[in-house]
Length: 353
Ligand code: SF4
Image (cartoon, rainbow, N blue to C red; front, side, top):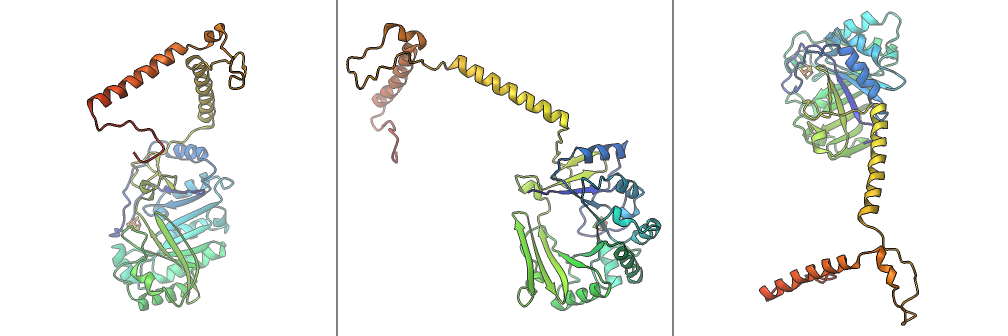
């Protein structure tokens, strides 16, 4: 994977209790900002985009300072994911100069139903953002030239084709740029809802790997992504798929925080290269000592000259007697085995044996 995902779990809480949530609250470590700054600076260049997630990042007192810390020359794209709570305040408190675009390129808003009450039920929270506020937020976000996608986890409340079409109509009325319908259960097979739109709609892209699959379609003039992925892709792939920076001061290859990621500093990398070079030189020297190449001092074309005889002093470069002993010992093992077991035949290679 050329551009692995990088997520920062913004320290703080969440005001919701979604049934499908796997987030666990973590206390930020001492010197959190120093840890974050050093970690971001040490990451290799393949990491060039950041996703800020939570908990609910817009309720976190750390969010603004984290945004200030991100080096925009290195991280070309910054994505903020919010459940909508706190988004209104965050935008209106921080937008006096209309400069959100300097810090954020894209906002994902989690919205799991077109109906406010059902949406609240899914979040188990009555303080989620309501439609009128949502509309105002999206307007300001667009004024900042930032794209908005609705993230919708497919639940039992959104099953039929009619439900999905209503959701799309709702998203269009709020002028969002795209919708991601995300299947639960952590497998890459299409959700039943995706299959309802299998025929009759334009597919504009499809990508997949062993752990995720995304299909992009235009449905009623709305760009819709159907997203399906494993819960912990890094545990199933033998390559760098994603990294997660945890509030408690560690960077791991998984969301559960069990697979630590090691980052080499430039100094470490230089030392490693020097060490590898020294090991290689050492190995070559050892080979020279262990396996002296027999030096053919006088090549006298023995096949052409049947009279050729090795000079007496040739043997000083290679101890043929040792080789002879070794071969004799191996041959003895085979002969002994044949004597003991009549059915035993040594393998001569080159066939099925
Ligand atoms: S809003 Fe996000 S972090 Fe909060 S409970 Fe729901 S899924 Fe979890």
